[in-house]
Structure formats: C-alpha cells, structure tokens
Image (cartoon, rainbow, N blue to C red; front, side, top):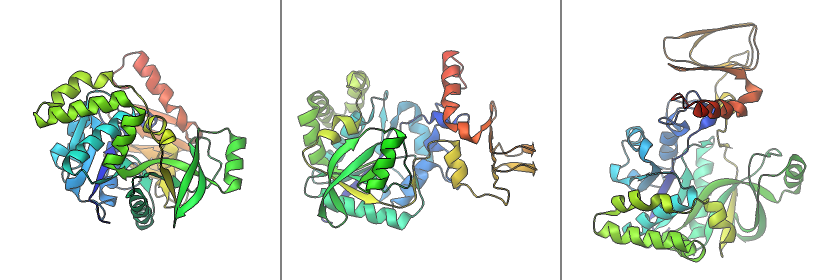
Length: 356
C-alpha cells in the first residue's frame, strides 16, 4: 500500500444499555465488557496496531470523556484526542477527523472504526480491513459488511451489487433496520450484509463528498483548517461546533456518495449491544453462569454477575438473570429484558438523578 494509513476511532457514545456500569462519565467504550481485562477502546486500538502505529491513531470523543479516554490509551499522543464540545452525530465527527488527517498528510488513507465493538477473529478482521483500505486507494468510499448469521432486526443492511475486485462489491443500496419477515428474506437471499459502521477512504475523497453533500459542514471545516494554522482551532470549535447539522455519516454521506463499495467479512463481530451480549462473550461454568465477581451459585443457571472487588454475590434458585452492582446502584433483570435498561436511564434522567 503506497499511502500512509491513519485510524480514526469514534468514541463519543454513552452506552446506556450497560447501566449501571456505564455512566455519562465512564461509558461503554471505557469498560472491559468483552470478557477480558482491557476496555473496549483499548482493545480496538490494540487490534489495529499491526496496521496503524499509535502515533497515527486519532480518537474523537467528547470533552467530558477526553481525559478518561487519554488515561485508557497512554500510547496514543494526547494531541491525537479530538474533543467535541457536544455530540453532533457521526458526519461532523468523521469530517473533522478527516480535516485533521489531511493537514498531516494530504494523500493519506483513513479507516474509521467504532470504539465499542468486539472482534473474535483478529487475523481475519485485519485481512478484511487491509482489503477495504486497498479498495479505497482509487477514491472510493468503502465500508465493511458483516456476513449475517441470523435474521437480525436491530441492524441496518447493505445489498451487494456486482463484484469490483476480489472480495469487494459495489453497494446496490442501504436498507434501514427491517421487520423480521424482511430480515428473513435478506438472510435467505445471500445478497445482504449487516452495516458495521466501519469506513475506509482517502481523506481528500471523503472531504470532497462532504463538500458535495454537506456544504455547510465543509465550509466550517475549512474555517477550522484556517484557524488551526493560527493556533486557534479549539476556540473556534468550542464556539461553533454546536451549530453543525446533526447527521449520521451513513445518511449524510455514504448513502448518496458517487463511488461506494463494500467488503463482506466474517470475523466474530459483535456490536456489544446489551448485557446479554456481554454474557454471551464471557466464559461460563458448567451451569452456564458467567461471573465478573466473587459469587456463590446454588441451583442457579444461565446468570451473569458483575460486582465490585470484595463484594460476594450469592444466587439461589434463579435462572437467566443479569445482576450488576456498582458502588451506588444495583441492577437485577431477566437476561431477555436487557434491551430495556435504557428505560431506567431515561427515568433517572427525568428525575435529574446523577446516577443516570
């Protein structure tokens, strides 16, 4: 690959479905939820290290999380952590990061990755990323599609078009999260992949698309470039970032881009969407219990337990529960209700409770 590669990690999410472990000041990406000891964002940076050295890794997060993120990633230069004054969805996030990359190297390639995904087969993952980067060298905007294993209704889909190269396809269309019957049709057809939210392109190519499709954002990014040369970018960002249109990169750019491609892949991917997923990834005993705590299980099966060090948790005669304790909160629920945790967060926010 003739071009220098940069990685941009999007790390501004709140992870409300992992309450009470995930909070506004320590969200999902800063927690070890994939069964190991590293936080999700630390795992993300570590798994791409063979492709991108840490000095070329940029993290886009919120001002509230910048210091905690820096502490999780001591190998990443502090200047590479871009702090958004407020979230404006992923199109401004990617555009701002691309402007930073272009300043450093106008010919650079970029990979844009979420901070909070789990990858089971890292060698296969890096092979797919390498294919996607190569496909982006000619100016195409490329995404990775996950080969579906079930009729999932919680993900967006991408319909494959014709083959462009080995392992690379045109994108026929993007499809919103479908109803179950439609998801079953997609799975049976073999012509659809899940939208992973990973993107690959040249910095100049994506900024060209931003200029074509989101001209107001492009104009603001040009102002940020000029301000950066004068040492006042952060002040201008603080004053103006909140005026940017809040739009996702998928809707704002990818769905209408002139040259888009997709690389299908299968590498044990999970978006770690709930405590149920954390349970599925964790090591389990003979009764199917997974614990991140000192626990005693009596006639209990299929449970997930997480608690602070030194706290003993005992379960008697219960099945398929999630039990998560922190210093100031306790969550107990059936595993099948894991998606409903956000309702607790919504209620706490309505009460203006700082434990949200």
